[in-house]
Image 1 (tube, one colour):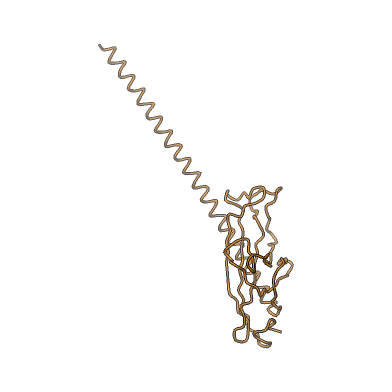
Image 2: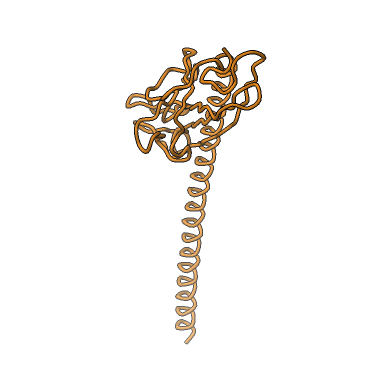
Length: 202
């Protein structure tokens, strides 16, 4: 009788140990999944912040260019120019929807988007897949809203792109899933000139 009782006790210990092992494995797998999700969330947040910062840089670049070139005549924007080279354009045609990418004007025609290339910015390509890259160059768009007082009011929209949602690695061609669009209004007042014209500060 003693041997039977001992055998039963050993069997209970084995079953208890296996159950405990299963519980530990389940907890470990759950923790690993939780860490993976948290890592992805942190990576997405970082890329969103990078997109916002580069969009704000493009917006500031547009505002500076506008302060130096407010006398530029507004016209139909249908081409892209290089903001890094000091180029720019003031558009008389508004964006269809600044929140919808890629930008379009006049119900779907190609927008005249000014591309602002940051000097120290790397864009992800097939041969570039490292942290610090961006999916695309930031862009801005300057729209002439019309005259106000002795000057002119302009709307500036800027968009920035992160490097992707995988913690900074943009991948072989970059990812535009992390984007940020910012908008500002600038009033340029002229001491002389013809407010309300296409060239208010001339």
